[in-house]
Image (cartoon, rainbow, N blue to C red; front, top):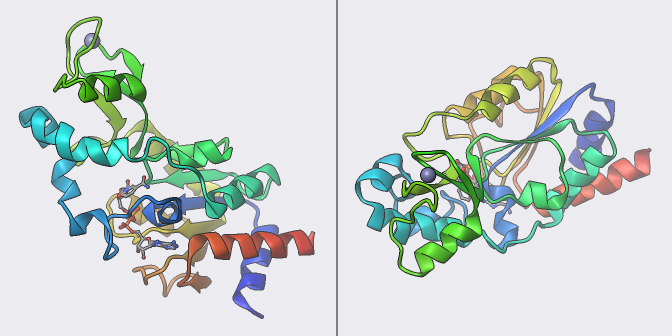
Length: 245
Ligand code: NAD
Ligand code: ZN
């Protein structure tokens, strides 16, 4: 049986399925990942640029380097891969998505259950009083030269709702883990599966489909592996499911 057919049948027959996605599902939307040859690591060290340490101790650098990564996500659009996952949820074949991405594209694609375990870039908050603002408020302040951007209510420093290197994991990560307790199948899309602690989540499920251009440490454990583009493979799997149903 070919792999598309096998993956489609696994999804149709699964009792509960979650997707785990990473930067690779969004490269087709024009957002570089971290570790490919054209990724952010080829230009800067995002582990530093997007770190809590730099945000607190060197805000000028944070708002000139790390912030650029976040600002570039602002107007990006979901691609065929995101849309296929939204369709699977609408068809009740996918219980939700656990994503490492901070680009909001699963939400924009229409998915309802999205655990953003590295946070999101729709909103920002004041580090002192916690007031939330739309990302556009921070963008305007930074573009007007207000670095670091300050809270209108208390004057505290604003920061993105993104989980930065050095931050604690958010509640979404805890909920995601408990969702996986009775999940049978995980569809992993566009993740190198090298970032901890997310890379231990595949250990919590029995069955696995991996769609990732390069190999991952879990390839040997997976039932089906595609080393191809996410949009095309997810599109073909969706077509095959529509034929089966
Ligand atoms: P990663 O950069 O470590 O790995 C991405 C993987 O995707 C690579 O193995 C690559 O081979 C694969 N890939 C690239 N394009 C692909 C495509 N079209 N189809 C299929 N596979 C493709 O990414 P990661 O595992 O998500 O970890 C990086 C961290 O960086 C995460 O914590 C994430 O928060 C953050 N990040 C997020 C974004 C985003 O929000 N879009 C972008 C860059 C980095
Ligand atoms: Zn405040």
